[in-house]
Amino acid sequence: MKARNIIYTVSIISLIGIFLLPLSGSIFQVDDTGLFAPKLIKNSKTPLNKNAGRILKLKEELRIDDVGDEFYFRNPQDIKVSPNGSIFILDENQLLHFNSSGKFIRNYFKSGQGPGETMNVREYLVDKDKLIIQGTGSKIMIYDFAGRFVSEHSHHEIPAFSSLRLGFNNKYYFSSRNYPIMDKPSYLSLSKNKMISFSPEDDKISSLMDFPTNIYTVLKKGKGRGIINVEELIAVPFKQKFLFLSHTGNYLIKLYDAEKNKVSRMFTRKFPKIRITEEYEREKTSGLLMDGKPVKVREMKFQDGVRWLFINNGNIWVMTSIKDKRNGTLFDVFTPEGEYIDNFYLKIPENQRRRIYGKWHFEIKDGSLYTIERTPESTYCIIRYRIEDEDKE
Figure 1: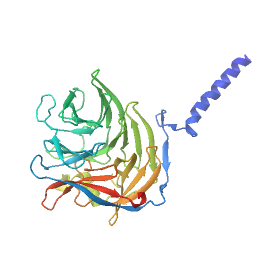
Figure 2: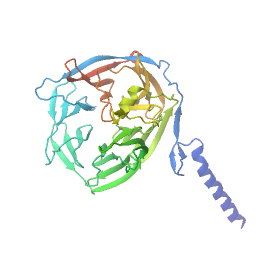
Figure 3: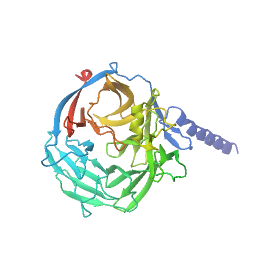
Figure 4: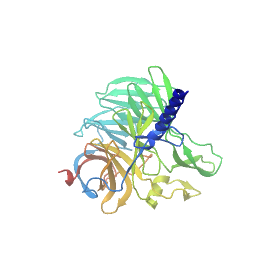
């Protein structure tokens, strides 16, 4: 009897230890649902670099102009850069490829409904040696960098308005938004932003995690509805199977492991609340009018702490909502482990194309800034700047 009591006592103590462990030094903790979640890494407001807060400068290295020969710039957007420095631009009926010297290589877009063809390009990913293109409906097309069509896949259960986020090991990951049923003139609600995966090998669709955001829906009299993204899902690929993402108005970054379908890391730093400005409000509402007047979202009082994310030289660059008229925008730098190591000001060129379709249309990669800019002739050009940092010299 005594032995049995001893066993019970040890078992109870062991169970208590298991539940206490996540609260004391483990990288995991119990979340509101009672499930284990990654512990939040809290950084101070001051980064490790003693020279933080400096001003970085830009030096133009490369310019690609619209010469009206093999390609044209009408509505250029969504600029991406491959590991070998090739530059890709999405435009009307074009997915343009330039090499690292700015030479035009090819247009991947092929209009139609046959193999390798699409009526439009919704999203695309640049892998090490291939392009993964999300076309009309649920079509996924693969091209190599030599312009050869490799394969395509589709599934009727991939939502039409989903966004391709990752592609690896012959599996594709999307985020899919849901919109509420309209029963009020205007109101705030949550959009799930559900992650889904598609495996062509077994023709299987899997429902994964949600990353909810607040949206403001406006019912326009006889003219449908308008959507204002009060919060946005920002997601950038990292080492093929991960996404660094932000989806709340707070300064919070998560590392999502798509293969394991879990958030494996979360980190933040002390960050001030920044009141919205007229410029910020115009950008968020995209000029949406109600009865001839700009729509006002009463619940939107502060700017998002995280405006955009970039992966640069292995670290995470966070474009923040802190701006200085003279010095530019404050960028924070974190290691992939979530350690706050640096910050600085960087002035984005004034002619840079403004944010449209929920994206900033510039890229930061391998120490360079790639922009889409307006010329004095009201045409577009692509410019690559070297980001000069005296602290690194």
